[in-house]
Amino acid sequence: MKRKTIDLITLGCSKNLVDSERLIRQLEEVGYHVTHDSEKLQGEIAVINTCGFIGDAKEESINMILEFAQAKEEGKLEKLYVMGCLSERYLKDLAIEIPQVDKFYGKFNWMELLQELGKVYHEELHIERTLTTPRHYAYLKISEGCDRKCSYCAIPIITGGHVSRPMEEILDEVRYLVEKGTKEFQVIAQELTYYGIDLYKKQMLPELIERISEIPGVEWIRLHYAYPAHFPTELFRVMRERPNVCKYMDIALQHISDPVLKKMRRQVTKEETYRLLEDFRKEVPGIHLRTTLMVGHPGETEADFEQLKEFVRKVRFDRMGAFAYSEEEGTYAATHYTDEIPQEVKQARLDEIMSIQQGISAGLSAAKVGQCMKVIIDRMEANYYIGRTEFDSPEVDPEVLIESDGKTLHIGNFYQVEIIDSDDFDLFGRII
Image 1 (cartoon, one colour):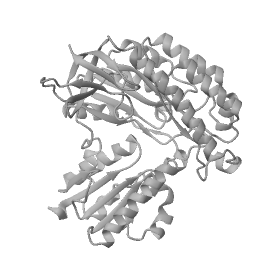
Image 2 (cartoon, one colour):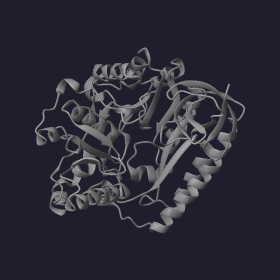
Image 3 (cartoon, helix red, strand yellow):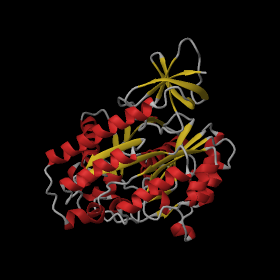
Image 4 (tube, rainbow, N blue to C red):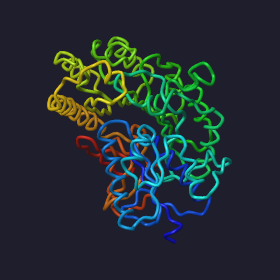
């Protein structure tokens, strides 16, 4: 059994996870048993799907490779393979530095791993995946790569330009997953709003989401990683009219100061950003906005940072993450700017902006106490069932904790829940 078992480790984002799920399905088809993110080695073969986005992610990926390389040297592992973004970006260097790895694959040629194992890639299964998430929700990747030229971002260097998947192929995948029991879809891409421009010569995200919403069995659709410039406003109508399109938008804004936005090459202004957010809240009543901000980009002054703090206080994002700038080789920022802001200043700004958001989140959560909300149950922990509302994406957003109190709830089912309490981030509820 150990010889036919493969340990697969996924690092980084949900887009990587989709690749891992596709690979697991192929490996299972040719007779392997695959464990995902197992705490200890169970097979003779291991595959690590790496991330190469920012410094911390690269360090985590390299440490994981070295840990498995050590296991191979100790005779606990027969074969070690590496794939994904870090491997795509540094393939030649990694092969020299870590010779214990039998073969490195990039972001897009992981199918060749099957040939290395003496097996065949089954093209007819290309839309099929073995979910690593609970079966009631799945990530749905609609494109690869990015055509944006943001100063700090290495993603286009790693993944290349934007490539949309054909709409019919995406719809077929949704139907396939619905048949397997999936009810909730997190629609993901490096940049959602660009979807369709390469294939159909226009932004097709609104039509795609509308067509997904028409598929029987699709109960929730949630959108991740949109870009503010040239936003397809027809999406407002779709979100407003379709009850299974969650009133939730993950739109990375990064900053609000015009000088910083210009240095970041974001192709949007402070005025345009405020107007877009105002339109969202006017056109889609009840919308919950998630964003990501960056502090410490080269050239960010104290005055710029003050504007960013004012932005956070004024807009009151429902969900917000932030990170400090880290220089990535090959990016525009690395070649044109000096990373002159000390790390301790970046960290202080990061801590301050997240502290402001924590207070906002606590207030927004408290405002939900007394409301009745539709909740999907993800799992049980100790004496609590853990669920989410339509405004909460798995892994990154608040959860609803429901004391079991002798009741039996079914994982993956929806329930009406009264919110009875809250803390800074999570809600507490009881079944109605």
